[in-house]
Length: 374
Ligand SMILES: *[C@@H]1O[C@H](CO)[C@@H](O)[C@H](O)[C@H]1NC(C)=O
Ligand SMILES: *[C@@H]1O[C@H](CO)[C@@H](O)[C@H](O)[C@H]1NC(C)=O
Ligand SMILES: *[C@@H]1O[C@H](CO)[C@@H](O)[C@H](O)[C@H]1NC(C)=O
Ligand SMILES: *[C@@H]1O[C@H](CO)[C@@H](O)[C@H](O)[C@H]1NC(C)=O
Image (tube, rainbow, N blue to C red; front, side, top):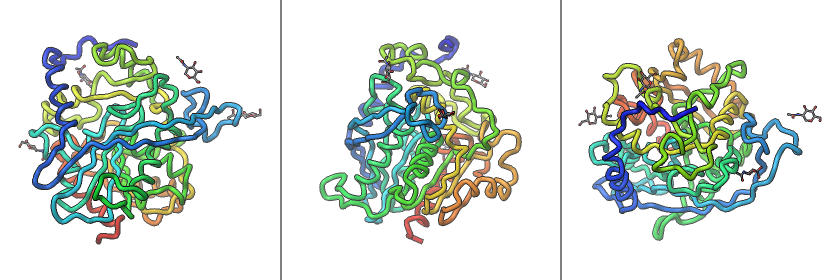
């Protein structure tokens, strides 16, 4: 495993751009439609994790002797954005990004990319958002030992944040929300799925919108982590030289975009490379839980995938949407409703290519339905 020396990021400019992005994130970002503020929520978890962090089912199928306790309070960072006018007071979306992405997946902090912001799109429809950095990622706590960042800890913090949104005021003057909709992308969707398996009917979400995600048939061979992700300290020594080598990142983001280069902006790929973050080998491997059923979650569920997703929709898997819906819905037997939408043209990162606006329309209409707004 080695970093890709041929990757041509213009590294001279990187510190400046990172600084700019950092400043954008820190400042209170206000536009006509949305006002955003950074918020940190302490999330206490007391969970069992596999002693072996590469255990693919995250402890769900392990013997107790193969598990250990993690009892910690972590800080979860997020960007809270609410509409300037026409706000639906009761409703909030908790947005959870995918592997090696941060809250910026939902709202790139660059003026030029504002039309790729699902957060802004949602604000214009009266919907507030809290887009978080997952445990170990971005500005959230990053445990020194990567083996503490596993599905039970990471999903546990997400559940705690959702409960906080329901019971506490996120900011002075903002009332607790009675409807919390979970919106995930890729790994974020799988973390929400894990929470729904573990907590069932108690899972504190009024609906789950799982984007860039399909349940895997149990027979499917998992993708080995060392073909996709590499120790972050080798890939980007300037940023991550001190990290536990089990914190990993990618060295090529093309798989996240449609194969057709006319489907996305090459500038977005540059932005994506500049703002990429880390994940752990455990959270990569434990995505295998996506082959398990979710027996007890009772809210409405929808999956939205890009028709041009180079791995989820490879080999014509997404052409027959009805067959796809049937094979996916059996995994969620107790769900109040279950839908699958294949967004024509979109890649794995539905938010970051030229088809984003169409995807955002689909997302927001599910959120409105799940929240009982239509
Ligand atoms: C990234 O992967 C794609 C597809 O595998 C390949 O065509 C491209 O050359 C790679 N890019 C870099 C910068 O290595
Ligand atoms: C659990 O323990 C039993 C008895 O020792 C053993 O047969 C089984 O394979 C173990 N299961 C796992 C998942 O390790
Ligand atoms: C990380 O934590 C695990 C579990 O407590 C332990 O076995 C391992 O030695 C730790 N690794 C380091 C580098 O401290
Ligand atoms: C965003 O705006 C740019 C330039 O104005 C345009 O090229 C691009 O297609 C737009 N993207 C989306 C997702 O609408």
